[in-house]
Amino acid sequence: MASSPVAGARDNTATMGGGLAALLLENVAGSPNSYLTIFAIPALLFFFRWVTTPSMSAREPPLVKPTIPVIGHIIHLLGKEGAFYTNIYKKTPMPIATLPLANHKIYFVTSPSLIQASLKNKNLSFDPFMVEFGKLMLGFSDAEWNPLVNQQLVDDFVRAIHGAMLGEHLHKMNATALKYIAERLDQIGTQPLKVDNLYMWTRQLVTMATAEALYGHANPAREAPEFLDDIWTMGTGIYHMVITRFLPSVFAPDALAARARLQSTLGAYYSARHDSNPDVARIVKARADTLRRYGFSDAQIGRFEMAMYHVATANTIPTLFWFLCHVFADPAIIARAREELDAFVTQSMSLPSSGKRRVTINVSTLEARAPFLVSIYRETTRMYAQNVVNRRVMADTELVSATGERYTLKKGADMHLPAEVAHTLSDVWGRDSDEFVADRFLQQQQQVQAATSGKDRRTTAQAFIPFGGGKHLCPGRNFAFAENLAMVLALAVGFEVRRAEDGGPVPVPKSAVGRLGHGILNPEGLGEGLEVNIERRKGWEDVEWRFVSTSSTATSS
Ligand code: HEM
Image (cartoon, rainbow, N blue to C red; front, side):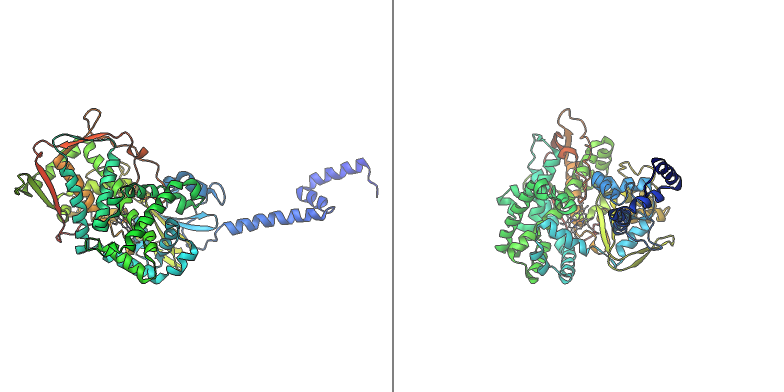
């Protein structure tokens, strides 16, 4: 039937009045392809949303939706990196929340009691991350990794690690590392030591001290000093190797090259069976023994053990740097530290035949004898830790907060416990939670002793997670304590550390942007331009330093 232009115009007017659906139906009638359009597009959109939005059950932690649907949190996470969690918490403060990352769920925990409940819960495991991150960081292919690594190995390995850094094993490591550090300090004579970059100086000295403590006299860094730099260069690539996993060969070629050199050098170390030398740390022996039992070749142990050297230095040394800066940056802090330390260090002096006065300090006593210095150390780890403790939910689990709220956690989801958020909660740490307060931990200890605020102390202890917690609580924390406390004590008492430019106090530099996958923040520009002079303190010119580590009061985080 022919239609007049007028009739057509009337029809269209009617259609507009009848709504969009009618228009679409009318047009679709003429074209089978259009049927596809009308049904397929919404179906696809629905399917995409269904696939990419995790389903939620009642009592799961409340959902925090991203501003941009589906991928908003991912974009925000990659853009803000370390500050991601703080930003989310500032916008939506919750004790626990569910963050959808595409179709994956992350439970983001900030409440101190829920943090501790998570760390203690056996259904929440770090093991899958050890396996997943390990393979990526160490550059094993699936074909090599899968036949070697199984749950039994992970269990044995974790047991071996934790048993190997206690008691006599720990004392031996402490003694070796601190001997190396003390000898370097003793070499500073009457002329000031000019240091171009305080961060790099600390890093070089303590990376080597740690290598000595781990690997003994066959420590590969003795023969190949580039080994020390390689461990840090490798660390810069972790973000690309493990977090984004996107073309590390393009974005982190130096890190991959450094990794290859480290792994080959360590492969030679294990092939020569240097790990059986008597001056090697128990943790190095125990790890290699376990890996050999599970069929790793010596070359594969070398590749795997690069991880040990990394974890032993990556967090301890930036912590030491900030600790040192804060002690020497504020004249009131260094004065108070010396008030605490001078008398007891003087009591620890002897006069050996060398003619020099010798101070001998047992690092295991410092917790009790140097509470102010220990407080500065803890405050440093509180302020600069930005590690995210990871756990995976292995079975549907219920978590109960201190106030009785119950949350259901679903199998397969991940949990993130970011130290940066927990360490700055103002209702836990006070209104000055963003500030560095040198005696914060000392004040708390005194309040506990006076029994005035046991509850507060419990809450801060629950929110303090620089070393993680539960079964995977960092086994190196006591060794890190010994290196940090001993070195800063010796410098505080026996030396002056001053800005080279004008002899003024050491500045505390800005910290670099926190990268995902890193624990303690680095200084901006890796300390470039932080020139200092280190010279003997008046009245302490002829003192040499010795540290021992014997069982008495155990040190702790
Ligand atoms: C200030 C220094 C250090 C900090 C802040 C630190 C922090 C951490 C953190 C947050 C974890 C994860 C814990 C968890 O998931 O619950 C960890 C694990 C670990 N750390 Fe440390 N760490 C430090 C020093 C050291 C040192 C010196 C060593 C060895 C000599 C070491 C060896 C390890 C090992 C082997 C693990 C894995 C433990 C396991 O999976 O069971 N760390 N550390």
